[in-house]
Image (tube, rainbow, N blue to C red):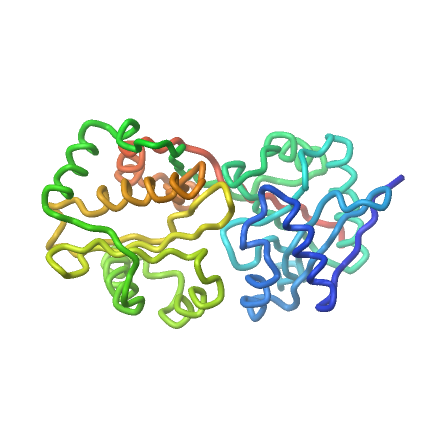
Length: 320
């Protein structure tokens, strides 16, 4: 029996959430709540459930966006990753059937291509190698890849820190640094934005967009302040994207407190909090940009015990 696709409309989004609740690798990037919040960035949002023998075996959220050759399906269309989800590791033949059904569904609707940025395995799904094999077999090209680093969390993060990183943490502790939830989100954003602007990259979200996201997602976004002598010396924003993995979204410090190494201190304290709340990984984010390695950033993340992995984007071009 072949795989059939059910495309959900606005009245079917409860079924979408029920499916996500069965998937260990689901993140809030996959949620209808997140997608609908960002729907202005695509022509229309898409929620596909793949059914075989009366059972939902896979799902794909995304958006139809205008591409160079015409409309294309992107998953995600407004995040770092999303892609296909399975409630359990799929047999390879089932994975191939899902991809073939997806190709046919998109071709029937005149879409020009399919772009998938799959969620890394550290978020709770462990079929990356199998899925990549199936994507390659079905003709998907690796269109982009970037290096990221993640910490495998344990009770004592310092055991994975390098000696220099341990010294830097102790320097912050001796200076009396304290980490606490931000009491002024706008001020924390301003500190981070100033630092990012100095680096030349800017912030990926405006202040209003960031505040709207914190309101939308609630306790799944942590904004933390590093306090020194009653004032905010550094700040960080972290996404509890899945039950398994916490993502670093931003962190920054004031230049005048650099000697206290507040980011080393913050990294340790966040790792301790994340471990105590049941997270298994702390994703430190990308270490390269369009495949170009940022060497200083790589050295810093590796000094914290970060292990490298790839974020990959695959594209399938469909016949006109």
